Length: 218
Image (tube, rainbow, N blue to C red; front, side, top):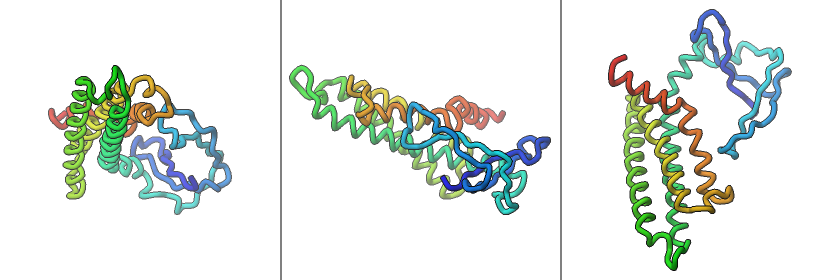
């Protein structure tokens, strides 16, 4: 990245209202990147340490109002959570399609895996769950387009879709069997990539709390 957005305390005594956002040019003196961190999934996306040693910023590096950074971040959370939900149902659909192709080709006991009732029922259940997730996500996309997507509805989409992605990846890996444990197979990578979806953008537990607050008024 040639530019990073930094959330920094500009007023340490003001709590959340003391956070501001800054655009930091990666070529500025004092800014450097550290090691790329090793993650269990999302290997195509670097996550690295960043270091700031007396980095001096011009006034126009401020992004948005001073002290308004936290509000900007919170205002984007519903859309961010919907984006995660969209990613989740798309990934679930993708790993299902990969698994369908595999079970049609892989044979056991003289017949394709796709002929076994357990395989057929598992794929049917997974497909129905994905369809439900897609419907929920589409409803939230419509609400976003009309300016009506609130925190609770976005949290519902993120909770359902990210948990769904994990279930689908796990069940599809089981159908692929030992090959599914090998990193060269897409289902293995899908399984590893799915895990973080229930963490970033707000954990599943936080999503449940936000939905409960909306339902109960506290």
